[in-house]
Length: 108
Image (cartoon, rainbow, N blue to C red; front, side, top):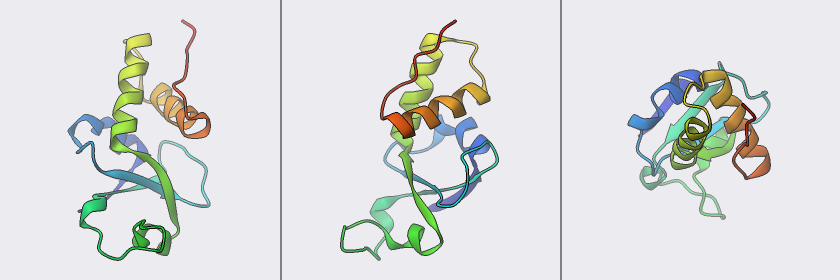
């Protein structure tokens, strides 16, 4: 299973995606709401590199971003801190997690 969605569309439906799937983003682009994400089920990918990672994402210029599970947790954590957080805050929280391997701590 492979899906290609803009980051904003993927995050909008993150709760409906399988937590086991992985998300990839283009290697050479800045993370923003319209960046195209590749969501795939790692278990269905047969062609694998020496590191046992799927070959397809890197063959089309994508790099690993976060798992769907990570993004679901990021959204949950953000909403616990601010129940009115919107898409821009969620994208910022996802970028922060990707860059720091930690949840963002927002000041209200």
